[in-house]
Length: 479
Image (cartoon, rainbow, N blue to C red; front, side, top):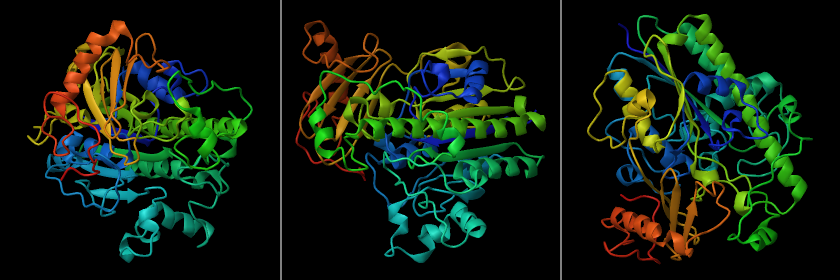
């Protein structure tokens, strides 16, 4: 019997709650809802280091941040890993292809894929005149090359006028079919139509959106621009004066101080999501039409979330649900396994994807991998992990560590020593910091001890095995 095909659909900066199948009151995602209704939706999936580079390192290597070494965001650092997920499938006779975002260094590093059609979105590091010419996005980015061929040499991914981390939004100014979201879908469908039919395939369709810029085509923006949207989550612990102080800066991590612009940004974010959803529908329909839908494992996920003004915060790297909670949906074709649709209760993380897919393909998992196969959770809703350690280095008082379970979360800011505790069962939107509440003190001590033990051998000196030590300098790379 031929091994299962694999379609890995990845988005950038897609929050875990932004699915209508997760009861989101505003955003509509009918194609993703269909996959969830026919498959397994992981309600407690997380990014352990919530920014683009470290999260992708976890996905592509199957390692935790402690093992792949990236605990913050830093461009221009070589990727030198012994085993990659795509490499294992290529070596096992799969035809492997990535289309869209990789965000690795050097650009166009294949990471085990046999083929790559690259679009990384706007990356300032690779627009600099100080890097080698071949690394520059105007040379290395396939989508940008195609856009310029279609619309002229002055055309650019920045032409709409909104910036890649900004809350400013504006509809796409070029024909809709030239949008990078459509481009990833077009190239993915072309790969599926022209693939080697004697081999199983591993296709990673990797979208830049809904990461900023919020530039969905006008018809998608129109779905949300005049709609009353659920307001961002407020709380009793954040500092709104930071938004008042910095909220006129278009990419401030403390959000936006203008109510109308906040609404427009949320509309732009949801418009980008529905645009992606419809384009995913095209890829799925292509599999149905060529008869391979039931021979394919389809999984949908994101590298991290987007705060979207919750708690007066913007973008990612924070330890809160908007930033760390990601969507994760598996649909296993009926010719591969008979899976009863359900919501999985286990804690899952990006490092678990590689061992899970190798497990379904009956391939050996390299001993460098420390993720866990999610197959027991997919088959019988068996828990594989009761807690997860996550972190992000930020170097401005915001470097943080967290322990999250499927019912609560403990947060420690390593530079300041600030602690937070949230009861995610009774307070899923983290509106009350219960760190001093009497009834939670035993539980807080338990979670704090987990973090003390987890950090005991870290080179930064965050823990001596008995207590957490604040004020230590943080790093983006452990080695």
